Amino acid sequence: MRRGNARLNCVGLSGQYHPAGFAEWSTPDVTVISGAQSDVSPDVKAAYRAVGSRVFHTAEDGAVRITLRSDRLFAQTWRGETK
Image 1 (cartoon, one colour):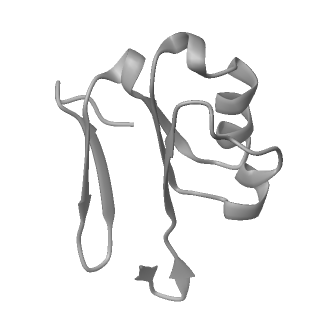
Image 2: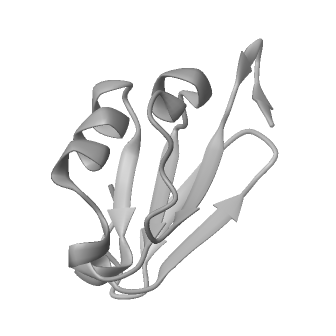
């Protein structure tokens, strides 16, 4: 997806599948991590936040809804919270 000349990225991750360096390579705008709190190291979340990603973790945020529009990407928890 593009906003002007900028590319919008969205990466969805599941459980323990977080290869080292993936955050820096993918530079996602939004990252959704699915799984229990114990499945993910705090370092993984920090790596995605360090590249400017809005990080959602289903263990903390519950269900996450991603909406794509022609020029924007919206991420919102089922509870109505946005990041």
